[in-house]
Image (tube, rainbow, N blue to C red; front, side, top):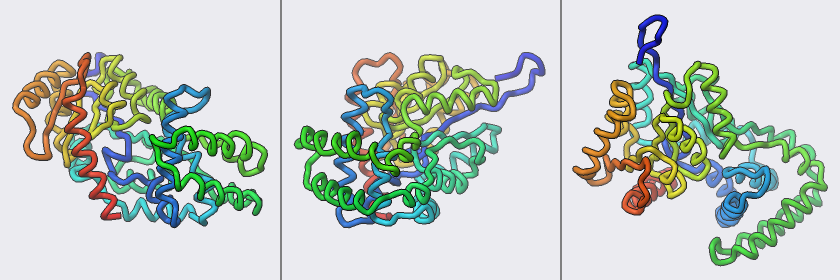
Length: 339
């Protein structure tokens, strides 16, 4: 691609989601696991997040789990330093360092738009050489909120955690809604910590689109010139916006929400398998990418790598979802063991 005024090549902008494409661990889940019942409580809160997002609750976005778990983090004494430390120790997705360094050497401009807490996101992206000003993530002032917590609030929180830890997502959805509706929308708003917590706005859903709009204005490139990489419900609106504009929206080891809104998909244990599609984008745009992806899709993947799928205007995502689900579990489970 060249500028009309100078004839010089323009750099290609690419925006990565963090958890999944760049780092396989779920930071919120790992933080909740620091407490004895935390993993079970997190599954209930995460299911609650899905239920609220899917029903379209006003001013609620996919990924707001990051706001919902804050009281539990405070209850168990999790600190901002611990969150940052996890970013230093967390494994990176295999192939992520090779891909990011390779793209930078080719003149690409790298961005990250993540629901993750800033203490974690900025540490991970720093390890990958993504400039701090090119990172949009969830701002968290955990110590400020902690100072406002009343001991009585902690007592109720512990009781709430105990109740939801014994519930099974999908089976006990009605009970999960009942318990957490009372806690989040009746009790917390009446507390000082709850009032401050409402200011935490995780970067998910439409907020990811807003972040991409800001970056797009900064580099003066419309969505049609962007590549976006995501994997979950928090990314689907960003992926959809880029795909609709004619850009390249990539679902990497994705769930059904991301696959439905993407231009193409890649299921692989290595992120740098994307390079062949990105090189095609840089040389010939979406048409060149489609040719490469359809050729690779016809050939099939190799074991756990290079499973490409062309998804734009594809009604049946079931074949892609099967392989994405398998490899997503493989990569995420291995990361959980390492963590």
